[in-house]
Image (cartoon, rainbow, N blue to C red):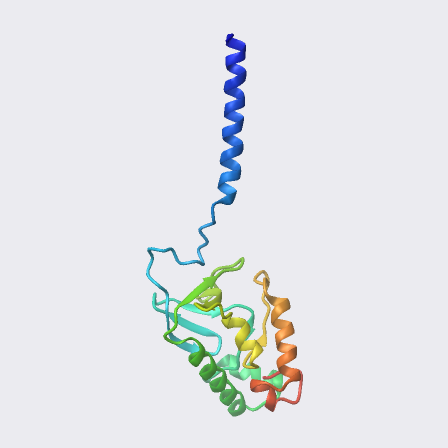
Length: 188
């Protein structure tokens, strides 16, 4: 074998290695930050703070992306919601407690998986996530589907906005959850 033939074989072998590594890496499952690693501790919901915010066993608070539930405590957002919707604060607080109870029963004490969108934290330092139960139940969607939240899309986190809008419309048409007491296009 000549030196030229040997270099040619080396180049072919190197190209083959690069191609195999490239396609081999594409076949390896991605280690997504939203997916707990096999050796990492399980993540559980320790508390539903309100209808759209939960606390994890890690101590972190998670704001559910794409949804908004009525306020369950007196604050300035409650005042804004009341002025915007022309509903009294007492009614909004009652609806907020209903939404919080729904989220509490759905999530507390259960193991969850988080899926992130473009932005991972809000201005308050909370994680922004889509949350799934072990059985695959999509928490954000379930709360909208059962009529306990309205869609609230804040770009760039818009991955499931279309799904949420369809679920909201169906919940409204079927008078589910908080929609059963609503006469307009908004819950609150």
